Length: 353
Ligand code: SF4
Image (cartoon, rainbow, N blue to C red; front, side, top):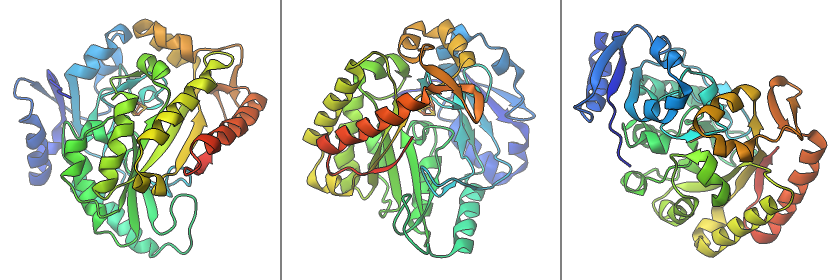
């Protein structure tokens, strides 16, 4: 995957520190043709908020932001991981139409890389040292405290732009009590296979039927490539799980058959070693009217799958967010898991909603 940024916004204070500056320059020199624009803060770039939504993909492809992560805290989670680690990037090079990350930063939310990666890693190391050994297994992991290091981005996509993802994986390899985890839709085997994670990183490939992914997972790797990558990553010392998400209901019955076809492909592709360690998470789509309006300006085709107002209702805890009707979800997730157990009996569900 090749990126050719035309403009790189650089948070000015990066130049006040020797290491930050060196890290930023390492990235900048990969894109020699880019115009460098200094800004006070990576959050305050008015042009990004003013960008026309119809220019969504162009902004994604042409703009990169380099910033400093302040507020190095690690939030309790309990679903994808025990903790959500302080971000090392936000925004994303991909453009999944349902992405919640896109709701936080204006325009098309281009990638922001945080260049103080050494501080971020040191802060995680300190946090897990303070916790000590995990006292008992939970659904996040049997042995280690797990930290989601890619909650606001796709780290495998970031690895085409910088070495932050690899730096963190190498750091986790030597942390006594902690394991890294991140969800991704981008295959970058050459990169990940050049690192020894020592079993301390869990990659979670997000999967959905290709028939839908081609319209809503814009800029990501094809589903079959993600599945084929699993055996290689396992052999290289990673743990790999699946995130069957978001589950999108686009018609009355076919959506279920499409998932069964996907599970059949997985069952036929994974090695015994991959199957032996496989687990998954599964959850339904969340959407919003505001995101729907934006999406209609740059990819209306995708909204034919996502926008189903006849059975999307406001989420009780976040009324601006739309979810499928509660009774429908309760019934369908139970059926989904039953079906999954039939097709992929080796793949327990870590959590679902
Ligand atoms: S890969 Fe993840 S972070 Fe990136 S656009 Fe898709 S859902 Fe959002």
